[in-house]
Image 1 (cartoon, rainbow, N blue to C red):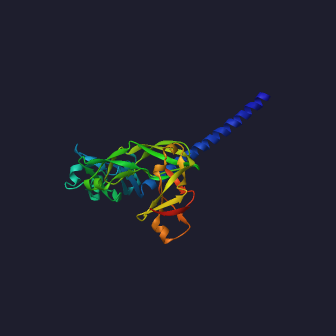
Image 2 (cartoon, rainbow, N blue to C red):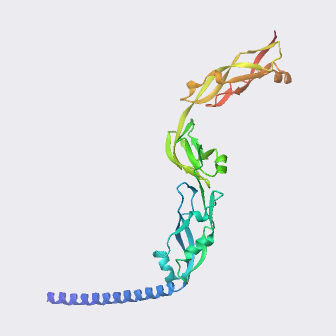
Length: 327
């Protein structure tokens, strides 16, 4: 009895599954038909699509150096039925454009200009008669070249480098220190250095080494176009040094004596450089002419010069006692 009931249940289950599968297959069939119908309508409509077409410079002489090449590609917008545009989008209907160097190079200059109309003619050769070109980008096609003129220039860092509190940037080093640039004579004469692309670093405490790109200049080829940059931070220390006071503009026969004769100069310097600082790198002056303009019991002293590798240099005091003696 139980076996008979189970058999009946299985028959009902199988019937339901067969019915469900049949409905699902019918649904898939009509979905497929509707998709085909929708595609046929969509692809039969007039549409516009932007397509990228590779472009290259051909037959460049061996003695010519291309300092700024043509764009890598042409972005062309085509207008046609969807069916007609498929070979352009997914096939090899549109081939790369080859621009002949000698056709467009200016014999008296360092620039070659390719008219957009010539680019359009090259593209039209690969299009169906029904396909229209509505736009071409960029709107200018040019390349720069020379015949080996070059020179070496130094590199400068561009950007913002900020060290952590108590540190300072002690050294910037490039490897290589100089790069070769190729350009027209006019550009070569005007360029004295090449900047890096902007670099922004904050809160620096350790040595940083990284490869950086150099800023491009239209009409200029830079070799190499990347360099290795090393930034060296150093710890700032507060130091002091005694420097003699020197009198200037003294009349003949008169001598100025200050009390004290030496004054302390306070300054900040990197821990690795403080041993290189000496009193000879400082100059503290008192100007006799200024004393005559502003008479006082004390004379004003001024820190005139100090070494370039220190910062925040200042006098411990800016006035001292003095005595003028007649010789």
